[in-house]
Each structure stands twice: as C-alpha cells, then as structure tokens.
Image (cartoon, rainbow, N blue to C red):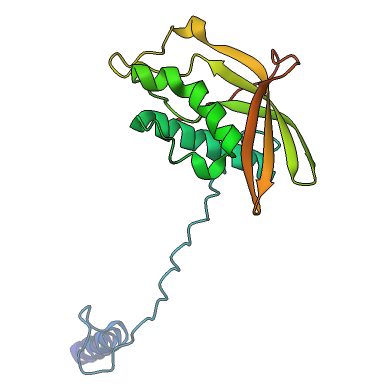
Length: 204
C-alpha cells in the first residue's frame, strides 16, 4: 500500500516538473535575448503638410480708366507737380517732361500760391476720371477733381483752410501726344455733377 502511494507521488512530481519545464519553454523570460536578431519595425514619417498659398489681395484701381495711357500720364503729372511743390522748386523741373510749354506755364500759375507760402501736398492731386476722349494725338480727360483743400501748412501739418476748404469740381484736362508721350496741355473748368463721384486719395 505504501509503495503504491509512493509511486503515485513520484509520478505526480514528475508530471509537475514536466509542466514547469513546458511553461518555461513557452513563456520564456520577460527580458529579451540579445543573441537573436532583433526585429526593427520601420515606420514612415508623416509627410509635412504643405501650406496652402494665400491669395494676396490686389489693390483696387482708383477708377475704371486707370489702364488708359492718358490717365496714366495725368497721374504721373500730378505726382510730379506735388513733388515740385514739396521741394519748393519754382522751375517745376520734374513737371517739364510731362507737360507742353503751355501746360507748364499754366501749372506755374496754379501752384504759385503754394510755393510762395511753403505749403506741401500730402500726395498727388486727387481726381477721378469719368471719361476719356482721344483722337489723332489729342485727348481730353473729364475728371472730378479736388480742386481746393489739398494743400497742407508745413508748419502746423493742417489742411489750409480746414476741411471746409475742400471743393470737388468737374475739371477737363487736355493732353497732346508729343514724340510718343502724352503731355498735359491745359486744365480747364468743365461742366457736370460730381456729387455722386468718389474721389480716392493717394498719399506719399
């Protein structure tokens, strides 16, 4: 009887030992072995997002006629006049290439007061063209122009005559084409209503 019990116990111990060895072989140690080849998982880097191009808003044109060469010549003319006034240049040297002899003489009379008082222009004379007529080297640009109230007292930095001095009038500008260049020939008071016309100002 005792020998039978011992035999069963011995067999049970053998079974338990075998199970322990099996568990050790299947489970293994928690620590990785450095002997075997290590498996490297390759991960591709996420692509860097490309920023979407941002549209740069273009400046709104001063009028629907800005593409006309006569209007471009007039813009350049008034910019040159303003530069001459601010520089105190009574010869209007910057204006001469942009005006005929008659136009230059007319300009001298128009800016005489500003030059005598040392006034400055904060930018080119503001105007809005409303029509352009051209024929055989001559052109007329109809405008609504800020004819007074643009000059600034250089000492005070204030508009000469204050805001009440501002006056918009219909002005006609005659141009002549000389050697391929449009030049201001005369600036005349026109007729028409400028009440509904927007005058955009451009400052230096």
